Image 1 (cartoon, rainbow, N blue to C red):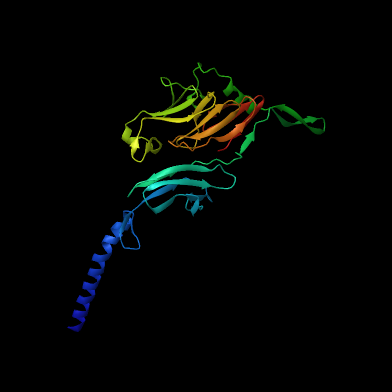
Image 2 (cartoon, rainbow, N blue to C red):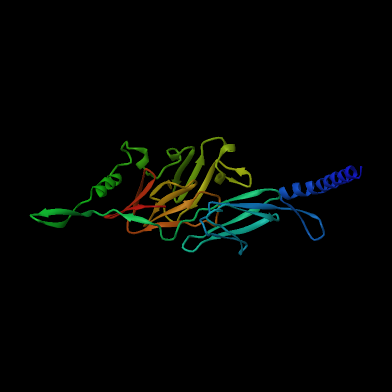
Length: 291
C-alpha cells in the first residue's frame, strides 16, 4: 500500500514538473528568454552558413562563434530585435560584412561567400617539354602544347556563333539575358542585375530580405561598364565579372556593404567557363582557376 502511494506521489511530481517545464521549453524554442526580472523577452537569431572552416563570426565587432571542419553552419540565438553588423573573417580570405535586421521569433540568413585573397590557378603554357631521340641520346625540346590551343579556341568564337552553351560568356541584356535555370543575368550601363523567372514564393533566398522578395535585384553598380558576365561555377548566387583590367566575383544579394572579390588583375583579361572551370586569357597568358 505504501509503495503504491509513493509511486502515485512520484507520478504526480513528474507530471507537475512537466507542466512547469513544457511552457519554458516552448518559449525557448521560439527564441524567448527571461531577463533578471523574469520578464519574457522576444528574440531572434542569425543562421550563418557556408563560412570557410576556421572563420570567426563577429556580431557588432565582438567575436561570437568560430566555424570548424565539422560545423561550418552556425546558429546564433537570443538576439534582441535590432540591426546587427555581422563580420565573418579568416586569415588569407576576403572579409564578409553585412548589416542584418533581426526580428522577434525570426531566424535571418547570412549566406557567406569568401574567396581566398590569393586564388589558386594552373598556368597552361604555350610550349611544353618533350623528349626527342638523337641517336643514342635523348634530349629535351620544346613543342606546342595541345591543351593551350584547345583552350585558346574558346576565346576565338564570336558571340554570334552557335556554340555550346557551356563556353558562352556574354554581357547579357534585359531582353536577352544570360540564363542559369530560372535566374537571369544582365547589365545596363555600369549596373548589373539579376531577375527570377519563376514564382516569387519559390525564389532563392538572395532575392528576399526579411520575408519580402523581389523578382529583380540590382547586384552592383560599378565604376566602369562590365565587359563580360557569367555565373561563377560551383557557387549559388555568385557571378563573375570582367571590368577594366580585373576579373572578380561578386555575391548576388541585397547588401550595400559587399565588396568585389578579386580573382585576377592584368592588362586586358578575358574569361570563359567550360565544364565548371574558369579559364582566363590575358595577352598570351592562359590560366585555369580553381575556386
